[in-house]
Image 1: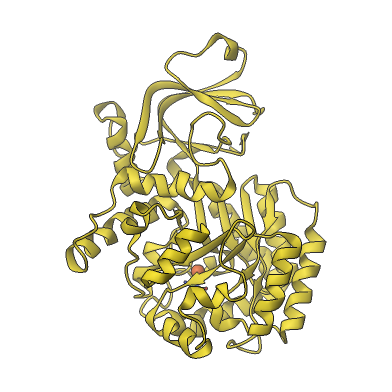
Image 2 (image 1 turned 90 degrees about the horizontal axis):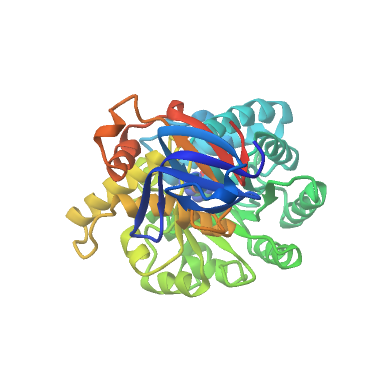
Length: 425
Ligand code: GUN
Ligand code: FE
């Protein structure tokens, strides 16, 4: 379908973090790949646009997975009785080492991309592995799929097995520069993001080199922050001069600010100072509730972050999480926020349906620009959901149908998907 089209159905999108807008039998108009608006009656000037009539189906903005590991897709659901550091050693690192083989990578990455393509997610910020060639294979597959993604070749030069660890900071930095050169100008929908795995796996020398690369190529950055108590204690040992975990990134200039758009996954245990710093620097938090439960990391104070106006989206964190579809993360975010409110801190009420929907769409979408809703001027990311498998849609309000979709829908219910103004199925 061309970049001018109209989609007719039951439309739902966020106006802000607390407000859902709905339109029954509405017209969603895409002009030059960008949303022109939602109308109850189609304005005459759009009457010549191609019409996709999905009357009775839900039309929702695409979801943005702000944190996911593509090479971990294959072993989802394994080692869920372990905590983070043991899980990395036993499952993650040995599996990621296999991506040194481009043929292995091609097969496994094809499965991940196929799954993501079918899901309601339209964009993602994706960790690959340290391997330059395999990372490029992942980027090729994503570009072919029509999805939009930021992809990172992972950097790690310490505290990991020989089979995976890069030989030195110098090797890691040079490989990263070569990777950037190799993919420069190659893609229209896939872009690089600098990806120091986490503080424990990056030496000071490597962090310095990555900061130079970040400034030279003006790349965004993604990493992990304050996920698990044992990890945080380890960072304190490795970086005793830092005031907190975030400061250990900040010392190298890799912690947000206008020139360094940054996503930090988890932020379960961030202290007051770290929270203030994330807010001041505009650091995006990728809230990954399923992963935080599976790896017994804890419950991030997502409601507080939202109330304080900190930039935030949702992450599947596959394979800490098991499901790519952010519907699953939305349900998990609500569930764990209820447990936190009941068991930990009654100050912050549980997350609501409009709030988690906002996080999965506009919240994460903001990292990509004007993305994640159907307000005029936003890039057109959308999907059509058939919710008739589990109820009679006409018996429910659109808000209720959205809530039920969060808990009940499956990828097979996604009938059509639009990414950056283009229909991919
Ligand atoms: N911290 C460092 N690496 C990882 C990873 O692969 N997954 C998660 N959840 N946390 C990490
Ligand atoms: Fe992660």
